[in-house]
Length: 205
Image 1 (cartoon, helix red, strand yellow):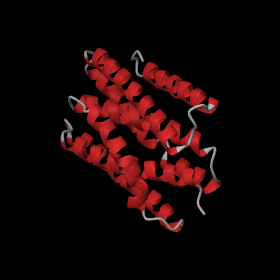
Image 2 (spheres, rainbow, N blue to C red):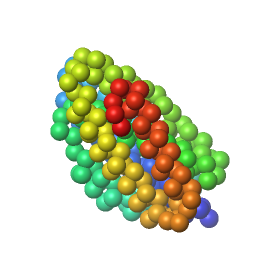
Image 3 (cartoon, one colour):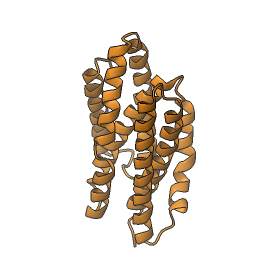
């Protein structure tokens, strides 16, 4: 029988990837240039391919994806409702922050699980998309320095919401018990890595 922790991780990843596909598809429509539209469109396709990889893994384990994703739907939808971007610039920052924090979180948690799950997480959370978003943010900030203070503030709000969401999901699913010392260490590391990435963009975390 498949470990419940593995199913929960695959469930939250699957719905997260599906949500990312939907968000990037929407963001692409409001891109300021056709180049940006094409880049975000391609990223949306990749997110859907990642979703399909998780669905295929669940099928191999004998589980139907919708039933495994459903327990996380309300929580993830609520998170996105609370963090609606005001414009395209905030959308790109949100995509970058959520993509990188999610990658850090899933990678850390997967180390506690089986090798096939770790390999799947490594494939899905490869840094390619984050690097594209980081490059676009740098150009955005170079072209319009006035955005820096607003995006720094937005980034701080996002990381606070994302860390709260990560803790909630990890406790509710049982990935990391509330008293787990690893949970505290993980949250501290997620914060540290986010601060490093914001510094690379010239923003205050």
